[in-house]
Image (cartoon, rainbow, N blue to C red; front, side, top):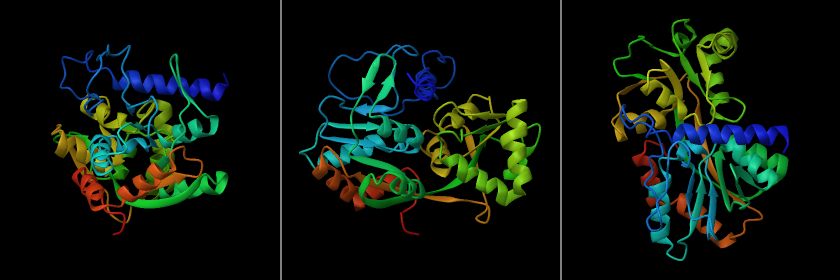
Amino acid sequence: MSPTWKHCRQVLLAGWLFAAGSAVQATQADYLPPWNPPPTGGVSFAVPPFDAIADLHGDIVDPQLTVFFAGNQFMVVHDLVEAFKQRYPQYQRVFVETLPPGILAKQIESGSLVVGNLRIALKPDVFTNGKGSIAELQKQHAWFAATTDYARNPLAIMVAKGNPKHIEGLEDLGRADVRVSMPNPQWEGIAKQIEASYRKAGGDALDRRIMQDKVKDGSTYLTRIHHRESPLRVLRGESDAAPVWSTEAYFQQQILRRPVETIAIPAGQNVTATYTAARMKDAPHAQAAKDFLAFMASTEAQAIYHKYGFQPAQP
């Protein structure tokens, strides 16, 4: 196994073990994922943290549609797939991965994903990611036959309820007494967006302080897998602040009613991502891929994204 894939496997396993540890944290509120309900039928077997998977959803055997979703949309997947099945009843076996897009791109390039003793060699029909990343991948690999923009998302800062560190903006994340949870730039596209906001708020000096100096002294934590790890660190008192997509804060605060607060980032310092769904040129289920892209632009799908705090694709 190449060093790159060995590292990816370790990252994936670390992330899934982290995501599956609710039984271990039984004395705390049930903060830990997976939050999506499991499929019905069959024998239910999960022994966290040893045998539990949070980011593989649905039917892995002979799927009629396979979608690789950028992981920050994990909260939407269950409702979205169920609505898609109702609208297109000919597709009942759907498999979805909600991993960081950098890992998903590596999976496409290599042809498979290794999880412990399991190898998944499914090709995606649809890949969703930030608009800029989709354009860059198309330039590099010419993977996509068609694309559809379907949602937007600005950044925000998540803090514990009551804001005990009195954080007012991005510049406060450079303070020595503030523990920051930050998406890892190695595989998380959001990290580039956040760093752009740091530079808008405090120039290169603020970016270096948070992403270099504080990483070295341990007061900036780089996530092992999803940037959704950051809200959990805030909830468990391991980090004081986490720059996140606004929907991450919305999901924790409004949907799950967790004890967190959102600090808005001014428009002049903020970055808004546009999400794009791309149909693969070599999609194994070409018609299903076309139908899914059409569905993503539908009123029904847009209502689901709105429910979870996403903005429409067009301002």
